[in-house]
Image 1 (tube, chains in turn blue, brown):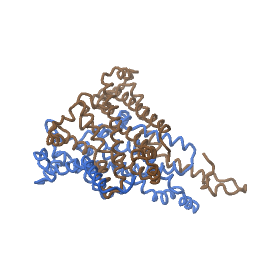
Image 2 (spheres, chains in turn brown, blue; image 1 turned 120 degrees about the vertical axis):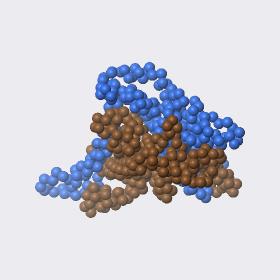
Image 3 (tube, chains in turn green, purple; image 1 turned 90 degrees about the horizontal axis):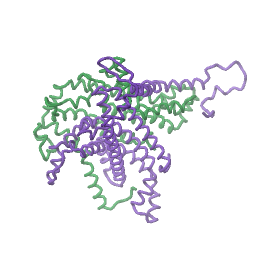
Image 4 (cartoon, one colour; image 1 turned 180 degrees about the horizontal axis):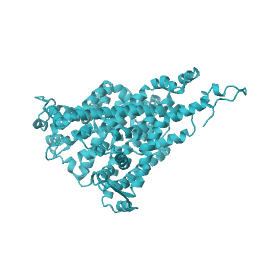
Length: 280
Length: 315
């Protein structure tokens, strides 16, 4: 439908796009600018698009009220471990299902795929009891192990398999004829070629772990173990009302780094997601 | 399994009946590698997906008391409780409303945005980035901000005031709470479906439109007769992802409405969480999990069947 448009149509389209962009952009903009304002100014209307007297007071209090630095590290290391673990598990399995012939392959692939229909919300009760019996409640193990092997990693395996199937096999065959073993072929030939798919899986997995909310509030109980989403909701006053400036400062610190990485690498983000196995 | 495995060269090469072939032929070694490669995924799935799914059935027949340390068989008591639960109807209605509202609004907006971004305009990459950006914003951070904007004296009502409209208390009204939760979630994640639609639209051959143009078909007619059928596999894929995702909604409800007012936004996962982890009715929580699983399963099967009916082609 890409056809040349008249000047007037273009103007109308730009107008529509600009209006539509407001609910996507304004909340983030408002979050960051409000975190720099005193509480009274946050409620002012119309809102100042830029804070008149920017101050970092709320940011200081974020760290006073909770072990926020520790919580930040928790979220970061959990997301990184889950991402690396998922990449390893899904690349190996995806490659085997796409390239290697072994008995029972199709049945085993279906068994793995069934995991897509079983989100962790369905199994959260038995998972809690399993980890409780193992003495792993209030540790980070459930937040690491369940995503690496559960539904998110099944989706990753599916994406990797689709990608390897679409990859021309000649290079790998040549390497095999030259006497390279199966693992070496995978590691030195196939894996370097699959960077776009690995990138998409990494982004998906990282965001999924970074956003996890049900699992942390079910499994974690001490503030120094908390992850960021859980910590964000804890900035409340004595009456249970949110401390807006502090909450927004903490929310900004949670959202901004990922947003900056996204803006820098947005081509990989968007196109990676669109052009891997998820297509059709 | 086909036997045309060209990769297995040397092992099957020699027709000469020399000394017995070694047990570890290339083919056998390859098979073993295959099993080793899938072992982590398979073991992990068995322990963290399949086993818990079996246990959820087992636990639904029991009542677990963490404090007393008891785990008692109660037969079908939990299922009886499910049948008698006065909240169940409201919970299922809220779940259905949320899913339907989310899917319709999400797919509709995603398609609209994708069509707009697929026009020959400068700066579409910038708009694509803007529309996609909430996807990478932390879910709870996004929800907290909207919680502020939607509260009674929040940004949205102040804006409505300026045009003389007295806005409702969005998150505390029976009907508006559900609409608010849906809208907040759509803006958060619609960028994902938009990008998938955009990729699909770019795959539609331009000469089809040219031919339709020659035949005098209107733009709207072209959209329904050419675009929609050709991107129907993507519509199916995104709708499956979105439906299953909509059934998992939790953080937004917990932060924005806590299931209220009344039970009007108590979706199944939130209800399950309340029963199991706030009231410690773990057995009943397991029973509700089975209901959730049954719904996910039924909807996926249904959508898979629909694929045969109206999806134009499969790539």
